[in-house]
Image (tube, rainbow, N blue to C red):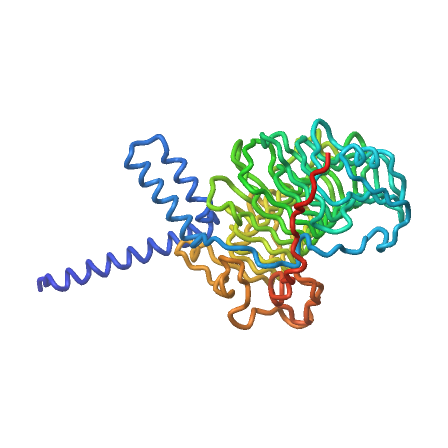
Length: 497
């Protein structure tokens, strides 16, 4: 009996539908297995299309922008809420001295007086800038006298927001001796060429037990640079409650990383607000903060890292936090080998958002602990190379957790996104918040919670976690807010030479 045209068409349509289903399923499986985020694939496609005929270039441009839009969503301008993290307008009690002066208070009212007082300082001294703005050029401020345990040497403004230090030098403070504290200062790089404003602080050699607290620092390539000299490394430092940012794209091929830690160990990076670290030249890869160079035991906890806030949608790759960074030359490694870039570090209760690349990147980092972090609008968490290993738990990741090049990611009990969904422009984790794109992170409904009995600890906002904590960095983001009186205000008083 001959087949009717109707039955033939029905079979053809069925075959086409099944073929499309198989193709879509295969493509979805391929995307999941390749683990290449749209935000990474888009720029790659656009670059590969350049230099071809106009039709291919137009397609590459369209494909690149479409993939970015699907992955990153609408990039909305927004003002930062009043955050209780980063520098505040209220002076904190000194960690080192408990708020009690242990030496003489040296008041300085000029650049020359400041340089002299710092050079002559003795354990327990408190070098205090009088209100005003101070312009430093020609050479670094040498910090070469040691403090001592219980009697650190302090350099400060008595009240935050009353002292502005303008640095037109490659390195501002070069700290080479132990037990120094810097607090309540506002520091701004003012070099005509960005390559000439490298660091506000260069902490080197024997400068252990360094503390920087409650400072506002803007417009440097690496606001803090920490590294060894010879056989000495500045261990056991603290960088806490600082606001680090840049007002514009850094026009340099030099490393752009607000906290650039190489070889030193047992540092605590806590409570900082880090944003807008965009590198225009060279490889265009920049980081909010990293520890590398064969150091160990460094901790990133309770920081807010916004790869892009005011500076958005620009070329290049921005990574939030990293152990290992982009790697270290053997000559600069603590063990002169860098078999691993970092050992035994932890990242806990950090909020990382708006990154064109990974939120957390582990490069040759062993025995890392990645716990209770929130990642929004990032490619996720990557553990790379066979010597890398990480225990990853309790995180809320708008992105994926993946291993590359045989890295060991022991991921358990996390809430993550999906690679396939990101290619479809679907981001359910962002929908958990009232408006994630503008950092309005109030929960829309009850947040996802871990099982009872999980070790609670302290969340991003400094609150104790309940016995059944929410996934991610915070329980209630409103407790990360502060009152207007705590906002830092730049000084508008007399300029002091």
